[in-house]
Length: 254
Image (tube, rainbow, N blue to C red):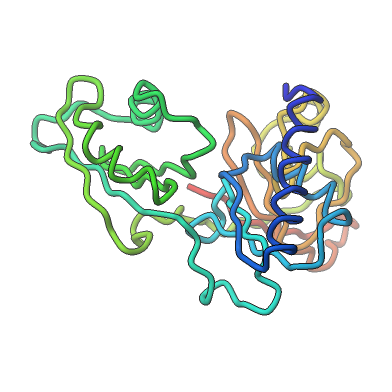
């Protein structure tokens, strides 16, 4: 669990970036924020200086986000976020071990890299897309040559490749009421009681913020992450059945 002093440090750091950006008239950028960091940012938005901000994780639905301050009159396309995309691939794919997210992340952390300087890491068929701070990319390319026992090669690419975007599956069903525990029970195919346990134990995040209220009513387009079960995006309710159950739809990330 994130310590209160850690969250206080993040909040103070973000407010300071906002102040410096506003007073100096320049764009400044945070590290990559995880779910708790994003929650801390949400809690201090009213305390930010009036210079504007943009959020960018490198691709839609990224979980780790960088914040750019001083962007009030700019669109995301006009602001150069210091983000680099790296593609890591086995040198000999035929003989590669099965490489997972944990393997790639562990190899990066073994280089002494702070986790906050690396964004999302997406692995598919033993290859990985590494999103990182621009100033870190050359170091990773030169130093990361092996994951487990597999030799890899890393190169810069200019955008996040579409084939690595998380796939979504449209799902539909009915629930007795628009409550978080009811939705997760249906979406995860588990009992409502088990869904409630996940929620109250801090395993469920809505739009990056921990949600412990089982009776919470999900809003359209909210993204829900469940540790150990993946994530989904709630779409909408579309009426009732003859037995007064709510018709709901959601997208499951696969």
